[in-house]
Length: 64
Image (cartoon, helix red, strand yellow):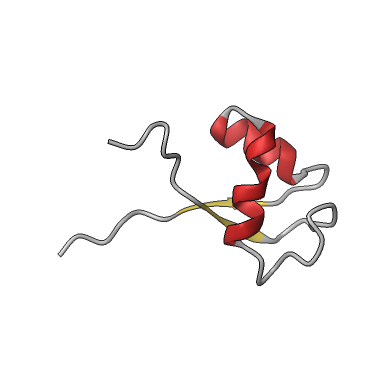
């Protein structure tokens, strides 16, 4: 049995979901995917805090 790899990102000062999405996926508009995957931690996508660790959904554009 293979366990899929889980990618995460730790928020640092000055980060936004848009910035994380642009860095990981190459497109900031995909921040909604990070928001949806981490709704249990994020009440407002405009308010994230240093130290939070978010699960990053796999990028279907680069998946094999």
